[in-house]
Length: 298
Picture 1: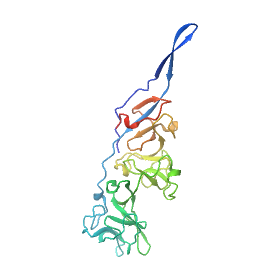
Picture 2: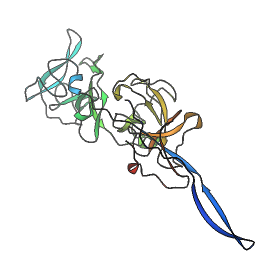
Picture 3: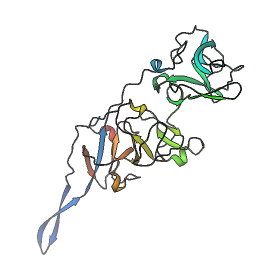
Picture 4: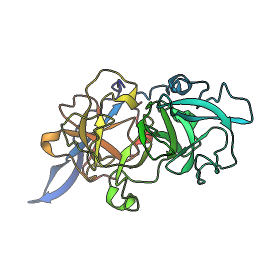
């Protein structure tokens, strides 16, 4: 994802207050200077969503659009024991809805759903979040298929499923993701800034990261990863910071730059950014929380 710097540039001039005091019977002018901090906006444009239907694994039908199957059937992953492969195939549509239990024989999922981890889930491909219901995003990948005999074979990572987003806080993973030991880290999970509890990562601040090697708690894989339009900008882990006031926490360590809020970041959150030369908004150090929605940035 490429980011356009905003046109906003307000100098951090000191705010001056003039007071009068009596000294030896004369009036003296006293200037009180209130120091300022800068609030930084990185801007950025959320890319158009991917064309999920075109990114679905090849087969006789399309998981996301259901094209290729009659109205009473469902496009689902079919295992061919002869070739030991999985392909998209039309078959009987069941009555199990999203979130309900399923198996490969008796509890079949309804049209547009696939059976993943024992529950019916909405099909989506290539991270296309527009295929999901409100409050969900295409953030899970169906990269493995379990056969009737229990064997697990790799599958095309293009097939995904929709999952809930918005249920955690980036700066408080320990509390908001505590109930999901498999996904203990709150992350930004799609280009719109949606967040969700996610698996732990094995990379730290400053280290290269990608979909398979995510960052630690309180960090973001910044740049142009697969979920961010696939451009060729290296992706590295950056620390997340509190944004919106001079004393917001957590703050950025001096060696990691300043806290910059990009369009991809949820409200109240920024990213520690080295060598930042973009625009900033000067506000009094003892001022209140900035209303970012009222600032002239895009």
